[in-house]
Amino acid sequence: MANKKSKKKSNQASPAASKAQPAQAAGKKADAKKAAPQKEEKKSLFKKGEKAPETSKKASKKTTKAKNAKPGIIVRAKKYLGSIRSEMKRVVWPSKKELINYSVAVVVSLVVVGIVIAVLDVVIGEGLLLLSGLRG
Image (tube, rainbow, N blue to C red; front, top):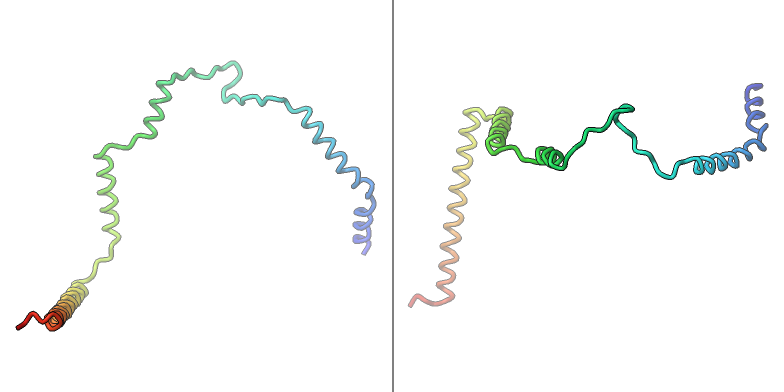
């Protein structure tokens, strides 16, 4: 109980101080703006007394070309074939029994679709002949 009261008292004890804090913070911001230099200095990556190595335009162009250049066609082909090989190792291949079942299903579906197309062809052809009256 005593701890709660002391906390309340410490929070309530300084209302004047809490009013003064924003004013002090505003003063600090203004001082910081005045103290800040107008131009920012470039940070050097080199030690004092050390000069940066001189770079020519040619040297910088070579490095940018080296970074942006595509690898040769042989390197790209090897990389492509290597990725195909790794993907083929991940493939789950069907067993012989599954392969036969799938093959039979494909052949049966081809026969059924072929028969349906043949029947539709005959029906549409006869219907057109009847409508046009080309048979004597």
